[in-house]
Length: 125
Image (cartoon, rainbow, N blue to C red):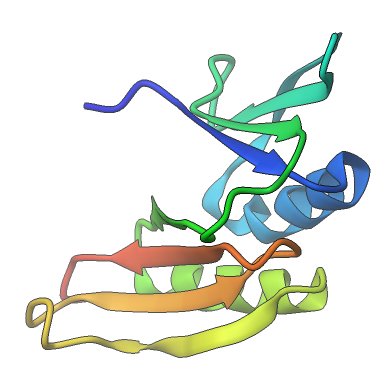
């Protein structure tokens, strides 16, 4: 199991706003934030211990793919709409991806630095 992941972002305040809105349907909130010698760092998660971190810096090249688990398909849909409203770019509207498996339901959005952010539900409903 992965404990946490840090994503370097080119504009921390804008990315923090984007992810706060985009991940809200998944139950994510900003749990910690502090200054480091390299700039602001913020940790997000569904509880007190963040598992997804943003750090001011040079965004990674090439962009990466991060997938977040959704409890149901409606949550995938809500993530997609929230991420687009927050400034993300469509990279695959919500729907089944049967080439992965029969119940794979995902949505893909490019964040402000071009990373491919996904919400995915693996259940039949």
